[in-house]
Image 1: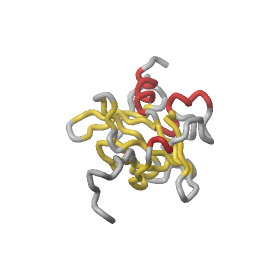
Image 2: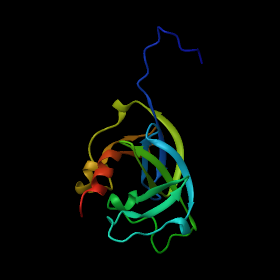
Image 3: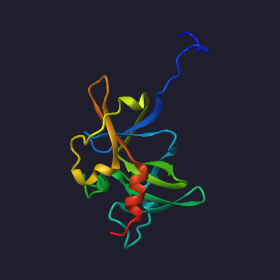
Image 4: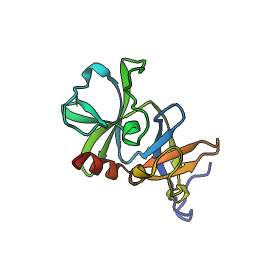
Length: 164
């Protein structure tokens, strides 16, 4: 690959981290919002009553209290930590939105990927319902014909802050 020169057109590609919400539903968030990935022991999650149902609890992480959100459940899909969950650990994406950090529980962290934001299509992808449309930034189809959904973490944070 030739080195980039000042005459090359500027790239508009952004980097994303991809993940599985369920065995068939892929998601992605921009790495600019990602602080770190965490393999968290379930026993470290402290449940707190009277929170929105998608908030599974909090955990202490590197000197801060990290709120943990089941993104799958927030999107109207089956909750990740259901009775048939088979592990004593879960995968968490620690993200920062508007100077607020929180954790998103995901089934599996996959890979880094680059795409041009203009390639992200608007509209509601399958299997999501209309009521969660504000939480979805768009979706794209990879060269392997996998549909990957991009999420609006700002809208997710606002949803969690609003009274139920």
